Amino acid sequence: MKISEVPQDQGMMTDDVHEVCYALDKDGRYVLAASSGWEPKNITNDQAWEVIEKQVTKALKDIHAGKQSPLAFHMAKNQMNISLLSKYVRFSRWQVRRHLKPAVFKRLKPDILERYADVFEITVKQLQEYPENIDQRFYRNL
Image 1 (spheres, one colour):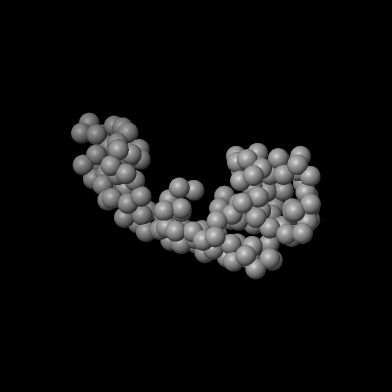
Image 2: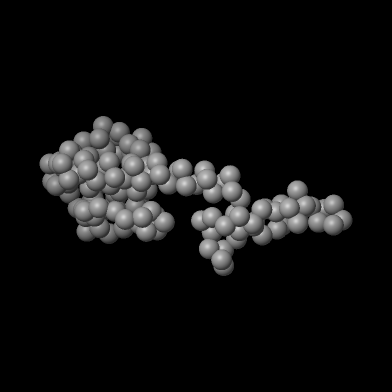
């Protein structure tokens, strides 16, 4: 596409943030061009955020119902599954699954909690907390 054809559809990008893409200049050479968005990509991003919102909301419902530990919230918020998280914290999948149980999570030693907190780049105190509910602004700050 030519520089003049680079999409400028407003979406998730703010006014001062642009993505970079390649476009042809007037001499037919590829150059970097700024784009403020592209409608198909904006639609796809919105759909992805809806999926993430459902996963985080389900995790919170399970936590409030006593079915899951706060670890479930942080996993959903960071888009991690048991397999991926187990690799990051260097625990087996069955251990992570076990740590998702509220009673087990409450008894975890500080060094284990610290490993999880380090992966999520939060404090141990934040790891043990979760919101009552989530508003739309939350999803844009993940």
